[in-house]
Image (cartoon, rainbow, N blue to C red; front, side, top):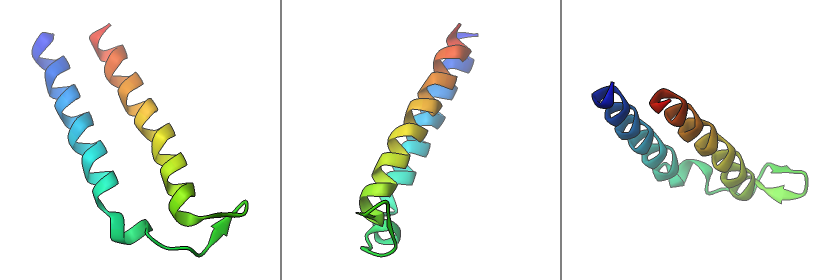
Length: 62
């Protein structure tokens, strides 16, 4: 069970790093959503996605 947890943590960290590392993809000003440039919208969305990913990992640990 412990090994499964560490694998999940590793995958979550790698996924998070990869999603934030695609900087050229989301480094754009248009489209603006809600008056914010897409760059900031992507950061806000990634904050929620990261929280959900780590919540799933926490539930795996039990």
